[in-house]
Image (cartoon, rainbow, N blue to C red; front, side, top):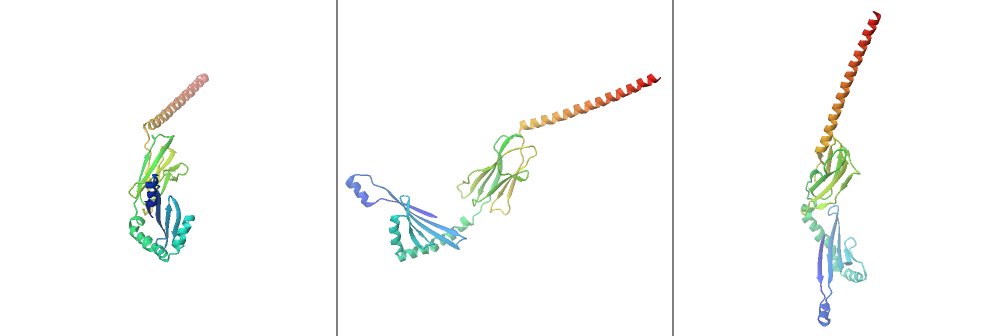
Length: 261
């Protein structure tokens, strides 16, 4: 696609400035050539648009082979241009001389260009068990811009809790995207960011295991210690109870023997 913007100041208006001392008016004329490639260069369409003061008035469509008017002013222009055989032949030939020609020039650097994505995972909130956490998969440096990023939790694909940023341009023909997962994290959970891109022979998967925060670790240790101590108290109590019950049984047997004597 190419675009040309030309600012034109009429000589007649410039002359009127000298005569009437009124400020000149500015007119903007634009010509935009657009090449559309379908299945490579097998099917090519050229649109040559002409615009005055941001209003398109006529355009050439190679599929039709003619100029087509967009308003009353364009009707006059289209009728005139379509009556010029040499002009029509020149525009029709531009499908080859401009579109297909430029396609071959830019194909290695634009169509065939591929850049593999870099993938990393960051936790953008303080990690704490049993609370909502936001984990971000940052994918950058890839081209072309079509990409698929998926979050998996314990091997199961996440859906409703996943949000994505807009596709960001890096300024070097590569792109970046950030895909966030908001979820609660339990001890032992594993997370995977899977990326599919046509520069890759197979999807790239980056695994992430939560590094439990100090407070969460303390809570977990406190729970474990409490469980162990509770178990000890139960065992000790059970042993004391069983010994006490055994002692009571012996005492009862001794008393019975004395009575019988």
